[in-house]
Length: 635
Image (cartoon, rainbow, N blue to C red; front, side, top):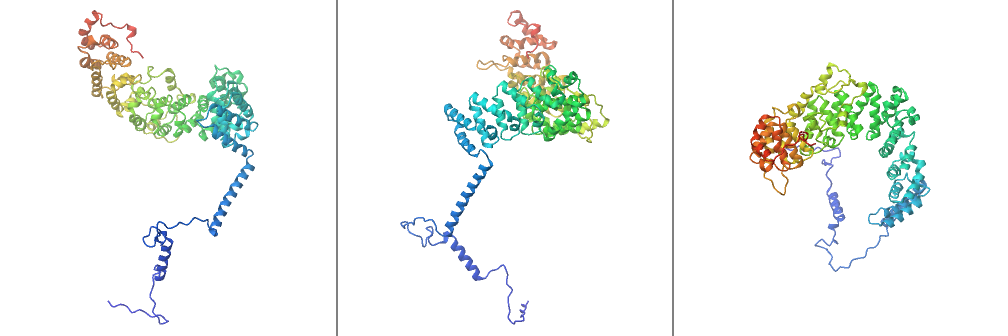
């Protein structure tokens, strides 16, 4: 196609359309020139350039400070910074009454807190600092820097100097307990206080306990004083949370009546009035989430004893969820947790278990937290949820958990529930605690379905324990979840370590006999036979002088002995693989208890199996049967 002729404009000249993004040739060349000149590498005086570079012996010019506009600007900036710094210090001197003193104390503090300083030098510096602060301690204790200086001085000063600091701060304890910086100084003073000073401090808290517990900072001081105090002083602090009447008549209460319900009955007070006052005190604490302190746990536990149905249900709902983990680290907090699990609805239990996710191993390792897991395994009917969160996390660290006194408790509860051999009387009593106002609360038909799937319609509906049959719940958690199979495999792999362990041997014994009520039989009989062979193979190893044989070791010999008495199938495997033909050698030392157990068992087949070889040893006096009172396994 032919090109279209360009149209002429009215002026007669033809103009081409130009792209606005393109620049003229002159502009481009100017731009390149400026870029080249601004780059030091392109300069002809740059020694790196081959052309125009100066020789190495070229004399260097000395640097001279510019006297032009640039130098004047730099000087003015420095002067401005100095002036602003001086103004800031002047403002601090006006705002802070003891600003100069704090600067002097900071210099002393840097010297006295060194590790390589001698005791004499530190004592001298501390005494100098205390003298400088004398008469002004209550004022400078609220300062960020001076409060830390005071802490160091209180830690390293003499007793007379410490007493002087205590006396000067005594009228200001309440205000200092609420201060962010002074609270650490107060707790340090309590740690180093004498019995008289601690009693004086606790008496100064009269009328302020409830208000301080509602503060994140003040609650630290109350908790610290509560932990340091004796039983009488703890009761005094708790009285502040109960009711005004109890504060007036606290002298009439003895330490025998340490429960709130007993105190109310002795003083003939109205339970509803005390409950209303405690609600007004504890509700703000719960709303602010101040749940880490043992004094709060104790007060909540007493409150649940006297609270009505709806108030108790409200507390359980507030404690359910992620905050539940924070209250179960103390004895009273763990009991509150067990009450929440026992009386909580299906929705509350679901929130509690989901809030534990990721912390199961830490909870299991705690002395009190492990009992909360035991309560969940004993009560909650939603076994799918429990298996998904609790059982799966326990399986990840199974080898470590079954060797510890606390962490083995959930496994022992599934294998042999509520056994006094593994749980003391206090633990068993805590599992049976209940809230009086919610005790025996009837359940609707819908509640059972809600427990199965873990859902709830949100209504207040309390359950006292689970509805599911306990054996069926154990079977679903232990066998159906696969935990039992992994337990047997772990016991086979760690047979020698577990048998020689003080607490691991108990797990080994319960697994080997198949658990209480034969819960592992007959599903896992083949796996149990592998476990018996693993133990027998270790017992069949010859004795070595450097190592203690498994039949001679204190814990393992007693565990194997009891397994021989209580588990005929294990006794048969052990006899055939390890003991037959070796009884004459093993009839000495602790291993003789294992040998004689074959004649003590009530199983006639096991007796008949070993009688032929053991009777001659008894007649010759090489083997002696233990007395009847010694036949039980040593705990």
